[in-house]
Figure 1 (cartoon, helix red, strand yellow):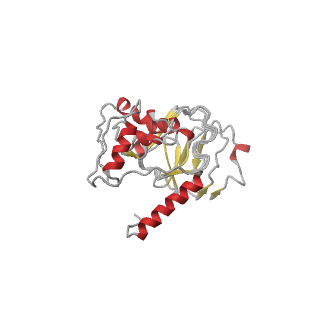
Figure 2: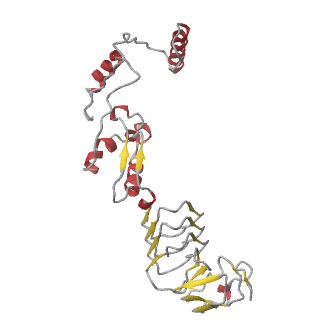
Figure 3: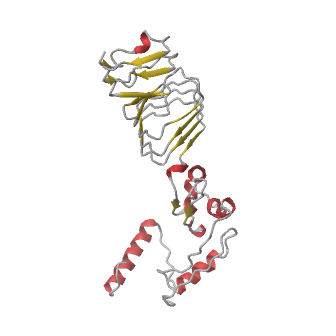
Length: 289
């Protein structure tokens, strides 16, 4: 036998009771789902003369062990660590494994094939190394017991901008992504939180030091765009906020012109007024920026 194509000759239709397989030296191609449904299969071994495939502890790999092709359905171990030599977990490689509860994927793995862990009914925890750049379609479909997929090792540092506009779901995702080193940096201004209408909560930034007690806070209080007149007005408004991080904005751009108050009838009138003021300033020699 030199070619096994599971799509045309599915083994499970007549091999459901088999518990051991030897890949003979002449076999050159094995389909992705060649052993699908072999519920009692505990070991796939490879003839030493075969140059296309290899096996370790009954698990099927390609010759140089860079691709994990099939993890037998009948294995009873509850946890499995993918070898460091592997860069690809093949399509459907673990599909339907009934015993596995924990999978650890090393940094060497860059690709996880589609349906790789589909129907692994007891799988609860997957630890994904930082090398993974592609996870195939439906890789974890119907893993109904899956509780945690650890991505922490994928990111050595995390930087988040506009943190004041994050919501509860984003906050929880961030907590899952932060690794044991807790290398997280957030940038934001609690006085510029404007997206509460879509679920943002200012509590995320206000409680950051409580969540990360060893955090260092750097206040960026110098303003490079506005004059003293504008910042004094902003500070006068900001100081009335009940919950805020103390700060005092300043600038070295000088006092500047007095603030003009304009009330428009609607958003179109407001836009028109702003455009007119910009064009008037440009006409007097000012720049757009």
